[in-house]
Image 1 (cartoon, rainbow, N blue to C red):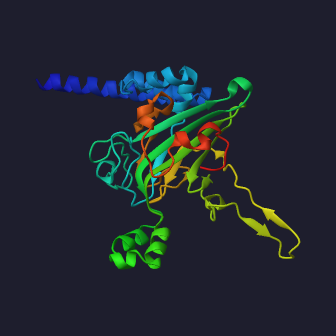
Image 2: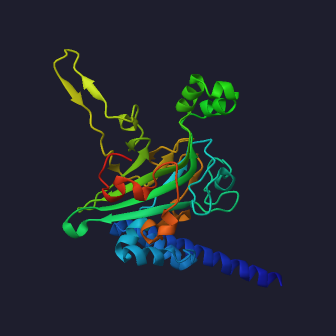
Image 3: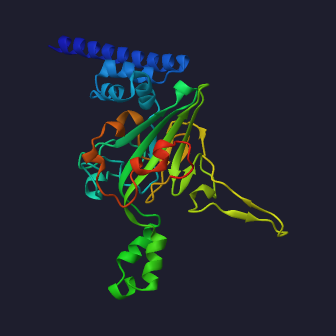
Length: 308
């Protein structure tokens, strides 16, 4: 019996090593061919864990564009203190079902209530006309609070104070609203460069910089100290060479690109459920939201816009 167990252990070890070698070769092959989806395709074949998602994406976008959608799905890092994961609003619109433990260094892809981390996708393919392939990834959160302490103070105010100017100012500073849609967007150029950007309040961000004037609710006008000229600083598209990672800010969920998660909690791309918006029925997109959902935003149809 002991020898049989030993033989089984050796066989299992051999299987594990074989799988590791196959997956390692997949990564190398993908890099060599500049086709990052190859690695995942082989992993799916070996581990059989893709839930038919690739077939659903291909049915909506075609096999080629769908491969890009899966390949460039973001890895998401969370600022410490961020409890909620991006979820499917059709089944979850509160913190009770969207929150997960904030455990540093862990890869979390389900909430404590079992909701999967979910991202909604959109493709604008202009390659047939010599243009770019645009892939939008939309992340839904039950609410947004720009400044948590102010929100807590506002909620604790007595009614008389809450209805006063002080209460209104506190709520404005908190920046709280129900329903929050944020995005990570990818642009693949006709010559093969891959750029990305993340939504950040009223504009977009690439790698972290301060101040990010794109986040202001207006386009600031810069005045000459001599009073003779002025320049209007237009928002930029913030397109940045893609790193594969976006970082979610606590409370507001504003994003920016990072090179990796460091020691922060994260959701790696393979753990995300991808839902094509184009395949959703009118009854699924007809609901009310406190902010505009993706399909009602101008950038949904014009992916080079600088407004969110």
